[in-house]
Image 1 (spheres, rainbow over the protein chains, first blue to last red):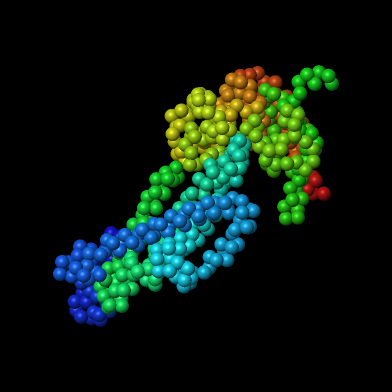
Image 2: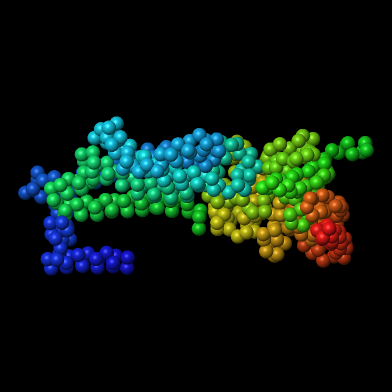
Length: 252
Length: 268
């Protein structure tokens, strides 16, 4: 049922292209995209030197690895920071204003600095990804920690839990569902960031292919890349949802 | 007064007053409360809603500090919450991500006890409250009465010196409440645990307690202290006996008098 509308749109697109109503140099026809994509994935001996022959897996791995690494850095820093901000008024007063000061700056605006500092290497992409993913995770972790039911905090202290134990055994698990909302949002930003970084500076990955294919007028490859990025974003989101379903099976 | 010194109270409240400041408004919650609670005693604090009886419990628990007066536990001022003064809240206040058994052993674990020490006790108590089949369930899978059983079990396992109960059955339906009251009487019969029980339900106070402190409307004061010398072990049938009803009538009159006084004060 949910596939019905996309299939109709795809059919319509193909029909328009076959009828010759689309500017073929700008909007490629779906069947051509499929053929090029197939070559891009599985290769073609006749075109073995083409950058769009058999290089899809490598590029997917380049981008995915960057997203995974950058996202991991963001999680490791943002989750503890957010939980601490939500839990300690002192820590919030010291750290939170700085975060809120930097947060409105879009990650795209960081690109020149990222290139200037990290050059055209992976570190540049990792910086943009982790910075971009950091904000939604830290904000949601903060809110999750703040929303800890005050009654269960009382209960924990009545049962002899120390302040540190309350942070680890009550505030943190209580903030986790909200943290996972942040992870989903952060993952979306991470994919945006990796494409931006690869389009502008890093010389590999799906973002690089996207911009490069545009320059040599391979709009079919552009479309195949866009769909690939979408699919990867969707897949990583499902992975987080699966993990959270497993972790929060106590919610019903 | 020499005969009193031989048995000093477990909890002593002396001239205790508590005021809340809300947006520049002073609200006197408690005014000059004096109570002594002895070890093994089942005490009920009975009063209308908003009379500050929960505040009194919170002070004894160490969640709130009084503005004046003293709350003494074994002769020492109460300064912070402690597993020795265990609280059963009106809402169950369980950890939703922990199973029933993990909720019950939370206290001993936090106090750094070894599982060899607390597990046999936890298993005995989970049986006593009738939840052994639900040990691996999460709170979201249990009914209100069962949740409150967990709330009671998790404090019993800590072997507290006093059980502070803040209208623990207030949110339950009438039938479940009766079952829970009998469960609590049963628990009390076993080891005569000291209990301070907050309620606005006259029958509940009389059925459970040895001593009922009747409180006035805000600012809360102790209007009268009534000794309930009904025989034990008690059960819900006791509430239909003439002697029970006579006591109930006495308290009803007290409360009506109080309500009339409050209405008169409001007019002036």
